[in-house]
Length: 79
Image 1 (spheres, rainbow, N blue to C red):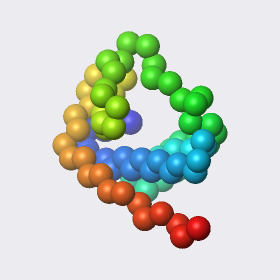
Image 2: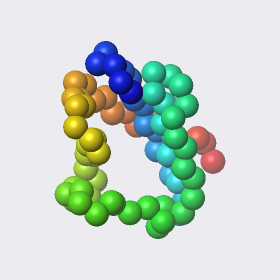
Image 3: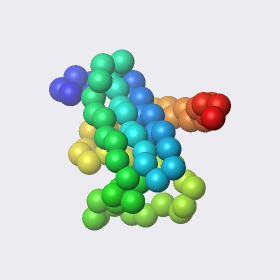
Image 4: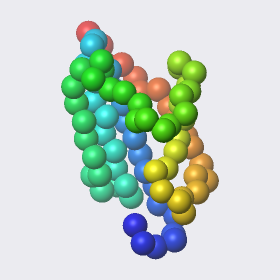
C-alpha cells in the first residue's frame, strides 16, 4: 500500500481439531490464506509474546496505525 487512506483488514481463524485455517482480506479482496496443523504455527523472532488467550495486532513496518479492532466469535457448525 502506498496511499494513506483507511483500509479494512479482516482476519478469520477457524479451528478444526488439530488443524486450522487463517484467511485474510484487505478491503474485501483476498490477501492471504493458510491451512494446516496448528502445531506448525509459531511467532516470528523479534515479536514480543502475548499471554495465552490474548489477541495482539502489530505491523512489520512503520507508517501503519490501527484505528479500530472488532472481534467476534464465529458460530460453530453443528456436528
